[in-house]
Amino acid sequence: GMSVAILGPTFQDLAANVNRNISSLSLIFVGRASGFLCGTTIGGILFDHMNQFFLLGLSMVATAAGLYLIPFCKTALILIITMSVFGASVGVVDTGANVLILALWGDKGAPHMQALHFNFALGAFLAPLLAKLAWGTTASAQNHTETDFVPLMLNQSSGAISDSLFAVPEDMNLLWAYASIGTYILVVSVFLFGLFCKKRSRQKKSTASAEGGRRAKYHKTLLCLLFFFFFFYVGAEITFGSYVFSFATTHVGMEESEAAGLNSVFWGTFAACRGLGIVFATLLQPGTMIVLSNIGSLVSTFFLVLFHKSPLCLWIATSVYGASMAVTFPSGVSWIEQYTSLSGKSTAFFVIGAALGDMAIPAVIGILQGHYPELPIVLYTCLGSAIFTAVLFPVMYKLATLPLKGEDQKALSISSRL
Image 1 (spheres, helix red, strand yellow):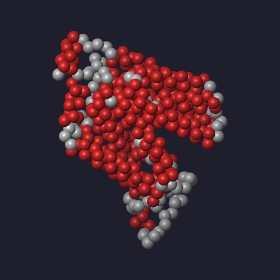
Image 2 (cartoon, one colour):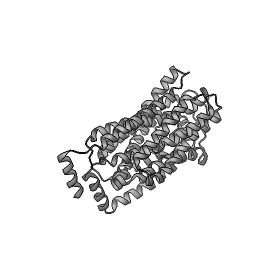
Image 3 (tube, helix red, strand yellow):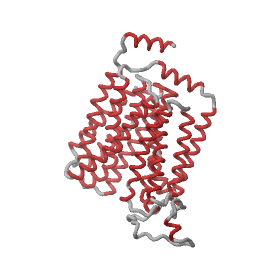
Image 4 (tube, one colour):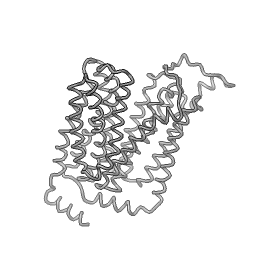
């Protein structure tokens, strides 16, 4: 969570570090997203053929190396390439963490899955505080251009500086912000390698039992539906979180300070309910939690669309929407594992769906909102996504609970006894 979220608050500092303006450096987001998709795909394949602790630890080391290297990049191209490689390692970690939880606990791992995703939200919440308060990166608020920036010549020739691909950044706080997160990740990787060195009989036993029996009649269809479920869910989550500030200022007429508070309320309730989801997962079935989340999303987005000019409604519905969105993803992963076993490739498949929703829906909504500025396109999108996921889940549940026929049922019974 920290490694992903640190880019936002330090983006301006990175632009100054490579002597570019912010708009011309936006390709680093594309580079990171492309690398993430590649890493998710490759990781899904590798986790089916390699030791999961070792591969996850190796990916954490690569992530830490990327964080150490990013502040030293002095050209935009090198920064984009480094960010792509960094995104690939994060994609492997994202897939591997879900796969490892399922391998260790199977369909009993709902609280552990909720804890995993809560820690992601907690890291994303702490990253801006670490970057701007603990280390206090201080780049100028104005956009930097390639022509108006003149580096100081401290006993070096201008050619040596301009040709340098890597160098110590002038803003050392930027370096410490990235290095501190990288060091933390490196320490975590040591524990993963320690687990790899231990006997893995318990892991093999649990994996074998998880793979031995459960396979839904429409396994592939379920994975495809889950792909679209997470595509729209994650797309709506990122879209609302990204555009609620501008929507509040332009459509509702809020002051920027109020709009910033509204944005914080959304992510605050999101993170808080992910933490509470650890407790709820011990009391409720994953399917029940998904239904409750869908109802909350439907009701809150309906009122957002209906009373989109009301500041009071915006505050209340935004907090409810953030709380409703919190547990859907980890609950979805735990729910599908109850009915059909997930391999690394299966997990990677729906994680890719979530990543594509993260990329595509906010981009499309940004274009549409520009063409129709008078309409609350963001709220229409969130309501549409809530309707889609609320309708899709009962279909998935029906397919998942269809009984197996004849020989398939007999084979499943024998496998379960074994």
